[in-house]
Image (tube, rainbow, N blue to C red; front, top):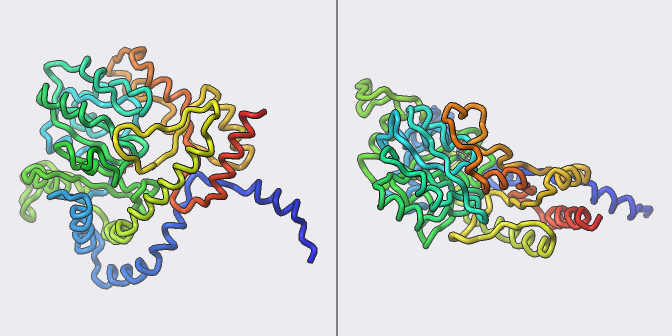
Amino acid sequence: MNVDFANLALARARERVPFNDLTIQWREIADDVRVDLQALFERSAFSAGPFVKAFEDDIAAYLGVRHAIAVNSGTSALHLATLAANIGPGDEVLVPSHTFIATVWGLLYVGAIPVFCDVDEATATIDVADAQSRVTHRTRAIIPVHLYGQPADMSGVLNLAERFDLKVIEDNAQAIGARWNNALLGTIGDVGCFSFYPGKNLGAAGEGGLVVTNDGQLAERVRSLGNHGQRERYVHTDIGFNYRMDGLQGLVLGRKLKRLDAWTARRRQLASRFQVGLAGLPLELPVVRNGDHVWHLFVVRTPRREELREHLARANIETGLHYPIPCHRQPCLQHLQMDRNSYPQSDRWARELLSLPFFYGMTDAQADRVIGAIHNFFRS
Ligand SMILES: *Cc1c(COP(=O)(O)O)cnc(C)c1O
């Protein structure tokens, strides 16, 4: 045999490490989904219907919550939760400035005012002391975002909410299955919103979202508003929306939900591997402070972010930025006339953060290649 080991090693070293790879999840559910798909078409269960109902029941049981309403995106979930919580024109709602913009779309759709708050220096979740300093007589609610897979400081959030009589709407698009004091995120506030965008820890084969609550009346309102504002067919009590989930998404999500805890366990292993492998470098690693972490993203920080990103790109390693522009600097929000200089931590996160490749199915070898490339960067 004439194997060129040097070249083989070189080829390995250059192999692309993708930011995410959803095909590994697909291979695990493919056999089940093929059978389900047959049933879906036979029953023409395309919009809502039995597969979505089954998924709602399963996820309500998984989360230990009374009501789960499946919808067509996380954005829709947040919009419906805002409406059902009776938040309307002129109402102020406290939200972290460092988040994905969809956290505030629902507020803007109803004419409410997002009041941006700075974030915690270590966890990038809402800084409750800063939030408190922004409370006015018009403040009606707070939206903690469980960013990157880690809980926001929910004791602080709940205290603040109680003191000022605020509704708590959890944006749990990124931390399904994570806990704060033994309670699953999304089930702690008045209402919890989830996203099943394909890249999320529990991802659909397209768009999807979920609203959960233990409040029966709120659940009724969410369900009705997302289904053309009707409780009874063709009786439209409210101006509604068509936010129903597709049958296909209910089917795929039901299959994935059964595997979610195992997939999260693997994410935790990978996170430890990165934590150990990157320890001691001039790089800020994620800290786990407010509860457990389900590692939607593995985000590090360095003032040399751009250089490091380019170095990894040259090594054929994909990275991401979540998120490079904080909400208080977004062009579409400048009418809110915020003091853009009152968010020092949020600005620093945006400047220094870098999301490393991280996904269920990533191999130890891929992780080690990323770790090795980062060591090389700081050596040179
Ligand atoms: C993904 C995400 C959303 C929006 O969900 P979509 O399903 O994409 O509409 C909202 N908030 C956060 C923090 C997210 O990461």
